[in-house]
Picture (spheres, helix red, strand yellow):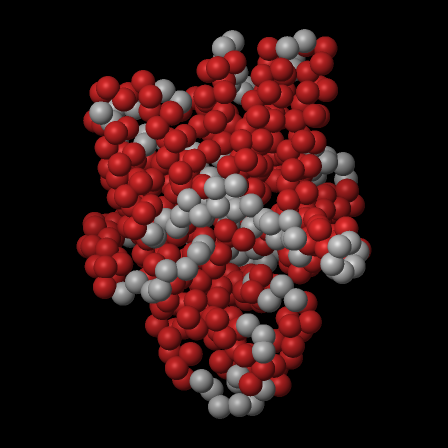
Amino acid sequence: MLFTSFPFLVLVLITVLLYYLPPFRRWQPLLIILASFVFYSWESPYLLTLLVVSIVINVVTSYLIARGDPARQKFWAVMGVVLNLGVLLFFKYSPMFAKTFFGGDHGTIGHFLMTIPLPIGISFFTFQGISLVVEVYRSKQPNDPFGYPEMVPASFREHLKNTMLFKTFFPNLVAGPIIKAHEFYPQIHAKLWRDLPWETAFRALVTGYFLKMVIADNLKDSTFWIAYPYFLNESSVTLATLLFGYSMQIFADFAGYSLIAIGLAALFGYTLPQNFNYPYISRSFAEFWRRWHISLSTWLREYLYLPLGGNRKGSVRTYFNLFIVMFLGGLWHGAGWSYAVWGTFHGLALAVERLVSKRVKLPDHPVVAVLQAVSVFSFVTLAWLLFKLPDFAHVIAYLGAMVENRAVTNLSHVSHVLFYSAPVVAYYGWHLLKRRFASAARAEYLLLGVMLAAILLDSGTAGAFIYFQF
């Protein structure tokens, strides 16, 4: 069920109306859980089985860590992480490994593995489950440095209800933001209508739906031509413009989804973490990853980079840790080697950048800052080609066509991309303007009104969110 579909809007309206009625106040978590099951199973009811299995794994292991035999806490923590990763590896990566190492002939193991479907949202709700298991385990260790709150009550039934809510919460169920257990569980309590943060919800929803429905859904009609073999006969200028448009599209699509999720969560009295902080003005790759998909990058840092040693074990180990985290982060995005190459690209960029920054100090000058931002954006945009064209041979062909093609520029594609990319550029420009002139914020409601009008008058044809495939 898409956020932009009519059935979804009906589901949200009914759930919100029931949610705040006094007779249903004690049933608020169960209402959201029920709505989440409807949302997740709308098109593929069989997927509920996997979601329930994931819930059971995390409820049981986290409860046994917190309330079981203290001597077996580590065992249950390891079991919880292994089972979560096992489910993720089986359903998400079996086809990739089958294609790489086995034949796809009918009746073979390889053929069976290649037919395993990819459940929507599995990467997101699996990572949330791992955060619960790890944080409950850490909270039970002496001198816990993280100071996690108590998340597992004595009642197994209560813990089951809370964990079902955490794992199924439909605003962020299928594409994030990834919320950690310690961020969510303390928020589980009765919500009152008078406490609803209307302004937060309104801003997030209008901006999110504008980015998705007006920008991303319109840009996809042009970036479609990046697909093989359509791009082979396009000019260098057209291909460069289409790739720029895809960079704008993937930002608008995913940032739009995250803002919609944040706005929907606010309607139910929950706060989700910020997931995008104007990443395309980053002056370094490290800064880019502090601004892009923030919930994933912080998850990888806390649960992978730091346990590997972070930057505490020398330069060589630090570079290796950066590389392996980004390599695995690339594979997290998709079950294909092109995603691993994408992650490797960013891992090497981070390592080289860290090495060079220790030896070269650039002047703090506006021109230098602009050149840095343009360079990072250009490299990031070039790497998005690995998302759009999962076949690496097609990526090479596209880059070759960008360099060599001298065909006539397709003005229709170019003008369409530039027209619908302009609001994203303006979105960033407005952010920079507000940072310099606080008074500019007074015009924000006017801009929200313009965005709302554009949603009603100029939405593109509905399409699935790009990150649904991950």
